[in-house]
Image (cartoon, rainbow over all chains, first blue to last red; front, side, top):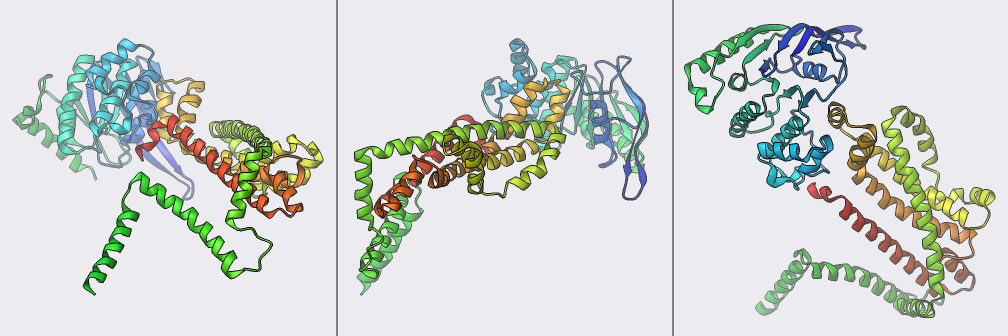
Length: 244
Length: 273
């Protein structure tokens, strides 16, 4: 279980000598095998939250626990898939995987799961945008993390590709039984992927609402037209719109 | 009249296709013609403008001198002496320059410590070190290695350091998340990311090394191409002086080309830009 307990964070603006509060008393638990999305307006501190959970920055208050154990540094138990390009350009697809894992069987398994086996010898610049994202995912899966944190991973891709990758992601998550914390500003994406959606408020950011997505686990694109789906989307939309 | 107009137009069309078509053979021809035009200009200048000139040799006289020194073979000992000095000085500069850049990039405090020192020493031209080098190391190869090192070190270090410092924070974060060992981080991520920058430094560095060795040999050496030029200057053999200069140019070109070939081999991802 991943647990955020009273997580708060503020920046010190030294030139104006004031504290700028970004996150305030965030309490959240994510159970194993769960897919939880965090939605909020741009600039509400989503990426700060990701950086804190990943261990890249230390929160000014509160703690993070992985299975009741407090964590303060980055580690293989929480792998982040970034919005920005995070693959090593000078390594082939295989070498990118090999850097983080010594097990060729596992490497082949996840390259095949993400349909990249044929491109093992290609360099990242030879891959399409979608393939790069799949490689980031394969690289995360190969170290068998307890949690995968995804920070708006499909942001830079066009709409059609996003939908396709969302379906693929769901399929891969089902197969690998991973726990995912997914950060996005796209409401439809959040509803389609998640078991639970957390809506963040404006600054200082707190959890405004928690919405259980009661859609069947096995989803495909057709579910986007269902009444339930549209209803959930509208609820989240109105929650976000209430945020100043 | 009409035929003449068409032929002029045809002529320009031909010239345009000749200049703008990307064919290797044509590129080579253009490159050759740039050298030939300089030689032609040099020849015409001496024959037509300064017919009474006795100081400067014509291109053909230089060509004969060049042929002469190459067939006699004495020049190769000088070429070899210069090359050894360049290779030794350049390799030391590469190891220290790249190594120091990696250390300074990894341990930021070392970078801050080195910065004023480097910025202070960098503008001092390598030849200004010659008197000090002769004082410390005497007249010999060690002095020349030192001068070559001083010429090559700064471009290699500053470019490598810039590369190491350009490593995006996201790569550091990925390395931390995946718990990649320090040694592997330095070797596989920091060094390899910086390779294109390092090679920029090496390419500038090899040119500087070659220039520095000639300068060092002009002043304090008993062998090498710089010494050969200096000796022939005293013997008033200007044709040999220019032949030596041509050799310096050709060897410098070959050294740069060698580095470029090595770069293409070991940075296969570099062509993405």
